[in-house]
Image (tube, rainbow, N blue to C red):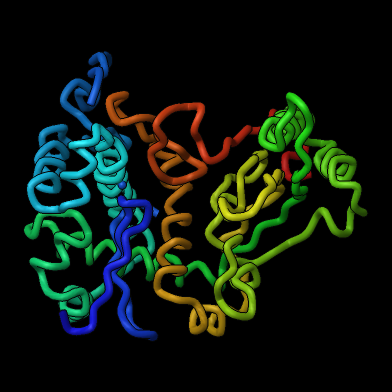
Length: 340
């Protein structure tokens, strides 16, 4: 087995771990019921697993990939036997959604990877056959997945030194009877969207902290932390449009919901990012890169067939239903000074 270790994350998202300082091959995620009704112009929704702008992901392609997993990946076969294949299906569709978003980002950002990098990544994962089974994609699509991973990592790095957000934020941790932290966070976000001119004031009242600590400017590189492992960098804080309130969980491992109002999202800032990029793991840069695809998803629009769930803009993935989103955005009403 050449010393490889295979780590199954929740039985769905697979990361192939190798010794320190080498890159792991990730399944693209952060990846059966009713058909969508066809209407209007553009791609047909009936035969689409998802539609991104004017691009359609054919339903047949996704179904073929899911069947391949059932036939070749023991975890998928076990999930099918247990009637619990939905997460595998959502991951497969989500990966293809990210692929389409990345195609736009690659053109706009002039991202490049060479065939040697792709080959090295595949070989480090054990070669095509083993890597395909570990990642959960047919061998003929493995190099596309590897290429996407490398490009997404590169996208994350490209924004480290040029992205800065001006925001007001509060973290809600206390639960109340009949009013969870999530409910409180979303209610605050709605209020911020309704009264954006009072964003800093409302945030300060909710957090019981002075304005100097609730409103700040933060670069993507600064959010990475000294060890390059900052979870905030890959959060919705850096992917949400300006003049928008967002409520989200910074971490599933820690209690609390963050509410942030984005006063400005500046992609032309100038700051250091080399140290953060050097310290960050490829996995972290991948997560940051996925987050940098959020504005494109917002711009183009993502529709998912109800058989797979709903697009989660904050989570940048597919959720089973609207009740299971990882967060929610609330665009603010227009004001005389939208950046207040």
